[in-house]
Length: 119
Length: 112
Image (cartoon, rainbow over all chains, first blue to last red; front, side):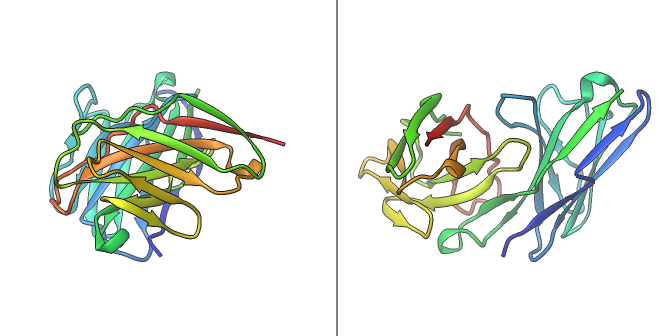
């Protein structure tokens, strides 16, 4: 159980275009999802917290107008990279929080990631 | 949020037991510990979670001393496929408000 999917798994786009990445919790409902980005050989960096039915909370230094997050349902959150530029090229990973962890504790389960390359 | 400290890298050989220790000196009473494994170009995979003493599942054991200021992930008889980055994270129990912040992790290299 507790499977999270992402689509697409990789995307190549031209500079100036927008790219949408979907994150779905397949077998559970998630009121909260998270978006991370990861550069090569580095750890995951939290970008924003996505709450179903409300505005996302962005971490300091993350442009909310650049990275649009929509959590329209309990199983779907989307991240749109607007007017993408080469410096936005990265590995984007989402996660969903559930109470299916040890002893029913809150646990985050992660998607497989989306590789974005902006030319 | 409790900060965690792990060794940057570790080497091991196939068949050996590997123990990775994480320090979290300012862990709070309602914090628990979770370990994840990450392979290149993949999302982190949940390994194990615990609050105190010892927890064991089909892939690993987690040892947490009484003061809870550290925890040790134990991987029995590692294989080459266990080469990955391992992250220790600390988060509050069922508050509904915590967010997971990743540290640098430990890069484990398993050699033949």
